[in-house]
Image (cartoon, rainbow, N blue to C red):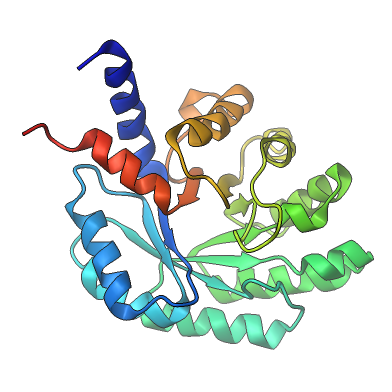
Length: 249
């Protein structure tokens, strides 16, 4: 193994515990999710969480029983609606099914229209419904569009006491970008790092993941990087990382 390979293996080992292994395909089945969870379970270094649609939370919970891997699911997804009752109901449903973490989409269309009150009301409802469970607020930065909106939406999430700010659903035309991540991380740093950060949407390689990792390190320091505060949401990335850390035969 060459020195370059050793460095990539070390980086993969560092990133795997920070990964939310994600499958949010419209054609997902319980069998496919169980197979995904078994790959996570068998990996030499397990990811922080597996993120799936609400319908597959129970299957993921069964497949990962006895591991430290968290079960995450999405609500108000992917549209980011403004129906408080819907958000509350969806959160209650996924918690009952066994979810540990909830990734909720900001009512970004309302926010873009200037209806900040509606957007905040939905986030507050999500925070209440989640209780002590981890709440990640998906800003959908590609739809917010401008640095000012991204910054203000990030601050709204922190003010509402979400646990993570997340870039994107992965369902928009523009997903995670370093530029949007930098703005979000600047807001987190200005608030003394009291909210986590999750980059998600289109991150398919180790090199792409490292770019987001470096942005966080530069603003918040190496000691801040931990699964409780920094995540990468991806699916294809897992295969590359898992292959790098697999024991040699």
